[in-house]
Amino acid sequence: MKSLVLFSNDLRLNDNDAINSSIKGYDSTTFLFVFDKDLYLKTHGSANLWWLKKSLDHLKENLKKKKITLHIIQGDYIKKTLEIIEKYKFDSVFINQNKHPEFIKKEDILKLCLKRININLFAYNKATLVDPTLILNKIGDPYKVYSPFYKNCKLLYSQKEVLKFPSINIRNFIIEEKEIDTSKVFSINNNKWSEKFDKYWSPGEDNAHISLEKFFKSSLSNYKEVRDIPSVSGTSKLSPHLRFGEITTNQIINHFKFHDNHALSKHEEHFIKELYWREFSYYILFHFPYVIDKPFNKKYENFEWEVNYKDNLEKWKKGNTGIRIVDAAMNELLETGWMHNRTRMITASFLTKNLLIPWQEGEKWFRDNLLDADIANNVMGWQWVSGCGTDAAPYFRIFNPLLQEKKFDPDNIYTKKWLNNFDLYTDDHETDLLTNNDLIKPIINLSNSRNIALERFSKIK
Image 1: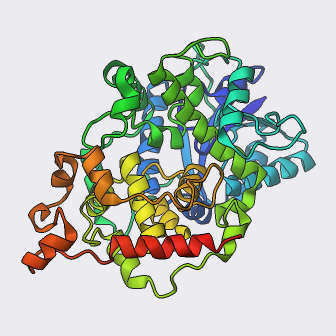
Image 2: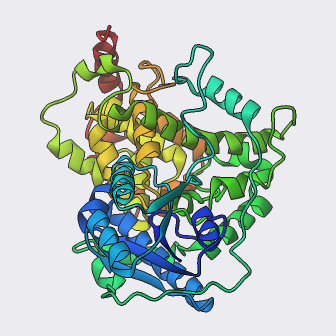
């Protein structure tokens, strides 16, 4: 009997249920990744594809060390998989579920197709800690607010075993299929900035665990305070590793004694709550799939956004707004493929509540340029800031980027790092600009734009 392991966003050897289950009762196993170009262009931004290429190479090399081949081939996800299953007469297929809506559709279709030809599909979930069908409120409805969702999750949490890659030798069945050159398939035309990423990032399962250990040793003990300071390396930076399944939330949370009657430190609790915000994002996407491009709070579908915003949108994208911390953050994104969480909120608030540009435009830009772009997290973050999502920031809460900079970057360490022309920006927009015409002018008046936003938000009933 032969089994097939089909990878997607589970690019790891450990804590991989599909791998461990595929060898039980089977004589040989094949490891396969199908690159469906249309599917991956829908589910991955440009920066994502850079990481995917690197992560696949890392996985392939780790398997090679164990004398196992990872077959990376190109074709339609469903058709190519079925073709290989029938051609080589596989008896069962093993996958770890991919929670992106487009992959959910593909996996459901694959399951039906396999059922027709009497082939088993075994699917496991390590993409999230939570089964969204099991976490419901007292009347059986999905939670719409994060806090009670988290409390229920903590109450119900049961620690799962962290699986190790099988210690026995796996008999690897080699298929004769045309392999693809990942450097060609995942190259990103006209995005030279991706070449910079090697300076900042090391994708792959091994590096994910190095990042986790580094975070535990250096930042967890004061995480709640330092996580908000963009000039300090105070966050885990595990998000891209999680996005590609190089590490699981199950592996991370197993480092804690996490259950309802255990008192965590404020730093541990804060970090775990952020893991569960990711869980909540996928939970909401599952129960309310329309949020992928429409407001969770449907009354905001009628919000009066600006119409002729193309020029201001381009200036925001390129870090040319004249607002120091906003431009610094956008430069960080373009240089590194990542942005600090505090400045993600600041830049998102500026786009939606000062420039009054639809949140979908910002979400799309982040999705294409962030290495850790994750559909559920990205959508939920943008809806939270713009005021139309679950647990949304109230419409009258508008981040003032000047005050945010003074609070979280008082010595301008962050802005000086990411602005080559720092000295041309002002501390006091009105006073400085009156005395020096050479200074960079903001593209919008913060006070006036705030008042316009408040007026428009107040009209939503």
